[in-house]
Image 1 (cartoon, one colour):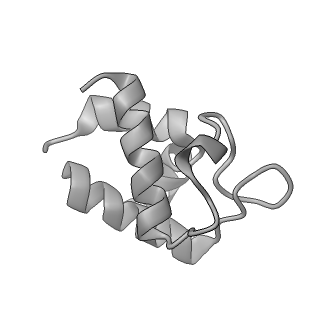
Image 2 (image 1 turned 120 degrees about the horizontal axis):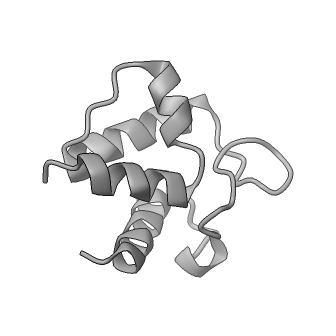
Image 3 (image 1 turned 45 degrees about the vertical axis):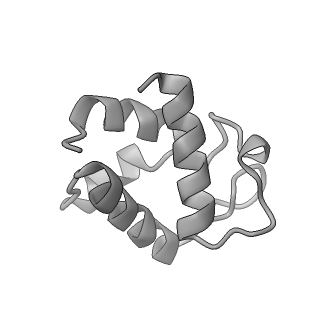
Amino acid sequence: METAQLKQQLKEQIIEFLNLTSLTPDKIKDDQPLFGDGEGLGLDSIDSLELIVLLNREFGIVIKDPKEGRKILVDVNTMVAYIEKNRTK
């Protein structure tokens, strides 16, 4: 799967998994921070757990260390790079 397709798929999955019904994939920028107020999506720690479940369920990626999770769940670009390197599905 090409990187652009994976980014689109991931955005759709984020919206679905986190029930962000007010968003569409084109409203999420690839480099937009997922967490924090301001220009980010404003996700919280519960959302980070949901994203970890998403990575496991959809891509076979297991994240056990919270520090590793913070490095991966930065933005769509960072998540896609990690998925491309580590996916098992």
